[in-house]
Image 1 (tube, rainbow, N blue to C red):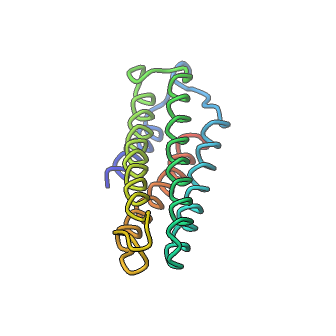
Image 2: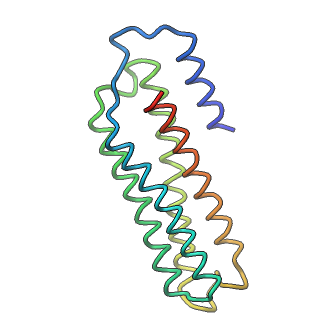
Length: 163
């Protein structure tokens, strides 16, 4: 619901308020496009981990979870790099504040997701570990959360960078 509120505020601001020429920023696409690819690939790698969990192959499940967590961390590093290279700051105008609020809140969710993935990675380390073929709920809950975070990024990417 919070993301919906942020989206509504941003789109309302953009539709209702005329933006002065000095407040319009041309956001570069390469880094956000890379971030999009990182998150979409991470959904695939998480799914692969799930397939190996179903086969009761703890080692391969762990490998794919580690790759997924690494992709999440790579996204966060890339996001921070973008923050340091943007031509505007948090308090420059309403666009800047909304941009940082949306991407920062999403980054918080990616951080929490990456931490949860590493917890699941640890719990799936052995065949009879806490997360296994018979007890998949923790894995599935984190996987659904991760796919949600990825989906929100796609919407963010479209709204902030393409519209």
